[in-house]
Image 1: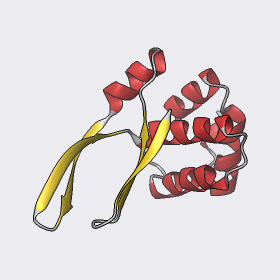
Image 2: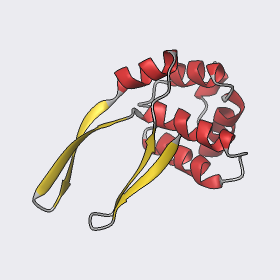
Image 3: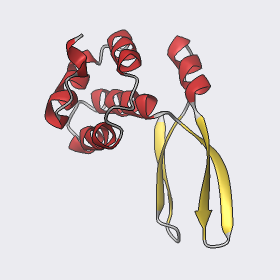
Image 4: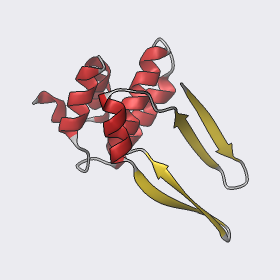
Length: 119
């Protein structure tokens, strides 16, 4: 299950994914980071999923939606380009395989010019 939260005044948008059960859910929870968001004089600290887990969640969301929305794939390509060289490609490969997302991961790797999937 997922939903979107938007703070209009600050123009923050967040995709919220409800944590599932299972091995990957434990990994995802352990890899989260604590981030501080600022808006004018106020701040809010929240946990944020790792870039790798964001990629996997968006691929899963795309797959569950029948792969008709390009938005999730474009978001993934954006993360791949911004985080190039800093991603844990072995982690992505492992959990994409576990979730049956290897084909989608290969597609966005190809479109984003990432070559790490070959191993």
